[in-house]
Image (cartoon, rainbow, N blue to C red; front, side, top):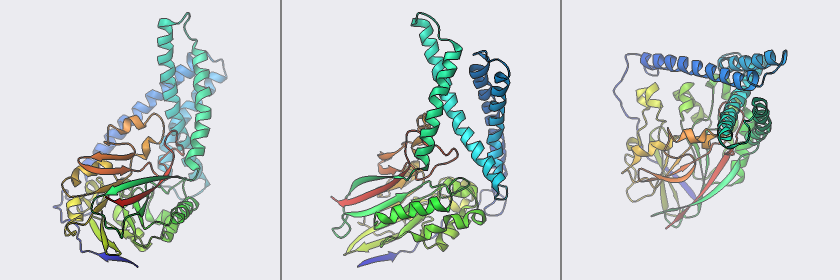
Amino acid sequence: MSVEVSSPSSRPHAEPRSSGPPGQVPVGLILRGILMLTMMVGLVAALHYYLGVRLVSDPGLAQPWAGLGWSVLWLGFLSIPAAMASTRMKHSWKEQALHWGGMLWMGAFGLLLTATVMADVVGWVWGLVGPAPLLARDKALAVVGVVVPAMLFAFRTARSPARVERVTVPVKGLGAGLSGMKVVQISDIHIGPTLDRRFMQRVVDQVNALQPDVVAVTGDLVDGGVTRLRDEVAPLAGLRAPLGVYYVTGNHEYYHGGAAWSAEVARLGLTVLDNAHRVVEREGSRLTVAGVTDLEGGRMDPSHACRPDVALAGAPAGVPRLLLAHQPRAAVLARDLGVDLQLSGHTHGGQLFPFMFFVKLQQPVIQGLATIAGVRVYTHRGTGYWGPPLRLGPAPEIAELTLVSV
């Protein structure tokens, strides 16, 4: 018989760091966001101009093709902010068209930029060693010839059922009663404008088919507010696991009301671990399952600061500890707290080549099992996707981690 034992925990009482009411975004953070957004828009516009020069002007396209090419580029550029703004619109076919169009172009832009830069590098090297320089028209045709099939493959990968990754993790001190237990992790589902209730139901069905002992939902569940997406995430209530279904917030929840989403997920029947823990037991063996709010939570609301020390306060000594934390780098805060395994996501495995190489600038690991600050961390590639409905390289994932005693 399986028994779940709750242990008391409380939210940290952090000192307020802004004069606004709890949950209000600090003014300084808003101003920094506006500055960064302005700089990013300027950079993206400049990169669109670069693509136009390389793919339209340099190849010497005749009219009306040259005008059409430039029009596509600038309409594509405008479609990206239009897609972002569409999330505030009332749900309609117009909102869907704006979002799908902008997000598909965002992905196409990334692939076109990567392929064009690579073509320029190859052309430069070829000019040094080749018998004759590569023609601009040939380079442009090569870019288009690579990007179009890559887009089709990436779209199919992103929209296909998630792959089940099976990993066995030895855990020191895990009792015989829990040895062999299955923890199924889903992360970064991003229910929103392009991923709906049907996708959520498919994920739930896949998870339940694995017959997990514990289910861990490690953040970035949504891209939108509770009012807009309540019905879309409702299938989450169907997750089943005898030792519990646990949830922690990701950074995207805080962009749309972190506390509201924690309350909604709790209403659906999941155990929300906002800097808290539970102790699960089977056949006399115990495991502490703890969870923390996302690292971004404290920026939005000081009372939502990520606090592994609070999450594990009062946890029984000598009992193995599993920590759920959306971002892998949260392990730095969990050092010296006796965490045996941390489950994280956030990175999407990079999602779209070659951006996985940039993830390393922000996170210590991209995917898989690794050790960070002395803590073993499993970093999930994500079950859905963010932004462009594309995955080129890392496929969507459902992780089945089997914990075994050492």
